[in-house]
Length: 182
Ligand SMILES: CC(C)(COP(=O)(O)OP(=O)(O)OC[C@H]1O[C@@H](n2cnc3c(N)ncnc32)[C@H](O)[C@@H]1OP(=O)(O)O)[C@@H](O)C(=O)NCCC(=O)NCCS
Image (cartoon, rainbow, N blue to C red; front, side, top):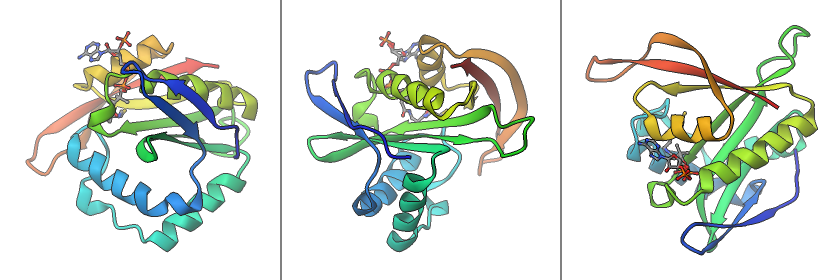
């Protein structure tokens, strides 16, 4: 979906714009996916698993903009991508169409500036606008910063998925399931 750009003030005084991505952001968003995947172990993909082409990413952004049931939000600081988050329906079946799934990641340089809270707050407004009733997410059990952010934004823990992730070194991580009613 398309939505209005919103300006927010970060804790360090800089201004950040929250807006839908434009097709021209495709290259920067691929770099962002690879960069954030390299900076933290708490995302699903290893950097070498991100193999999108600029054309493919452009098409993906265009589809997301035209789809009234999903939202992608890019955070831009001084003209550069700082992070991204997204919201998409779990599925079209009547019994699950009240639920949407949420994902967020920021470059490490932008952690701790209140950006995550601002993005999730705006995303909750968009979820309500679309007509979803709840936002679902999974977070790695050791990811304390993300869980602190989610609790602050009104998410509550509803369960735990055993050994949800297996790392290349053979270790496993559980996921915590969280939900927020919107
Ligand atoms: C998780 C993430 C989105 C958080 O974004 P952020 O902008 O740093 O979050 P905010 O600054 O808005 O808020 C985080 C809150 O948690 C608090 N916090 C940070 N680290 C904490 C910790 N280890 N324990 C408890 N609280 C912590 C902060 O103090 C802050 O609260 P405050 O604003 O009341 O001080 C960001 O760190 C990130 O992109 N991480 C890598 C990707 C990732 O893990 N994504 C989530 C996958 S489920």
